[in-house]
Amino acid sequence: MSYIIRPWVTRDLKDIMHLIRESAAFHKALDQVTTTPEILRDDGFGKEATFGCLVAEVPPERTSKNGHTIVGYQFHYLSYCTWDGPILFGEDLYVVPEFRGKGIGTSLMNKVAKIALEKGCSQFRFISAQWNQPAMDFFTRLGAVNVTTQDHWHLCHIDGEHVRKLAEQSRK
Image (cartoon, rainbow, N blue to C red; front, side):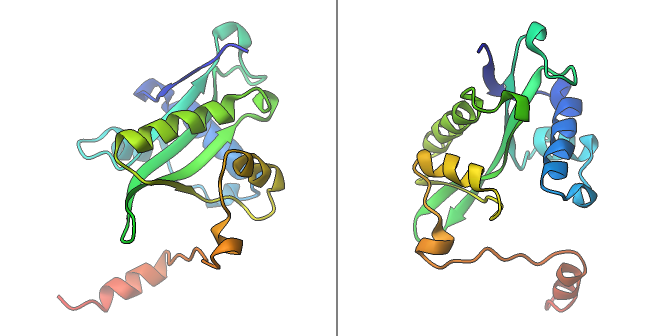
């Protein structure tokens, strides 16, 4: 199958937004998507971009059933591990279902691993939905270790109103 993996560009915003919504629907979380193309543009291409994105693109004659040539993406950003130094965190990996099993997901992971090494990172971390066993099997084949079961770490987050309450309680 013919495709390329490349860094995204601003003309990809509409297609990426479509895929983000498709991914959220797959995870039964479409109602949680608040990102807009404008937010993605400002955060991904602004003076101080906070993330990078790779896209998988097929030739125009191989478009998805929805007519898109961007058939996958992988978002990532730099983070830091106090024990291990810089790490690259993969926020999202998504490949359109009809293009899965063709090496696209692996190619996206290969390329982001290369980015991690170029940035001096010792690790590439990411999350996966607990119920998504095919994704977990895919990541395991690539050498991923599930730290939830191995090291008993849990990923936690504070959001929305709770973040505001914490900030209000900070000392000036």
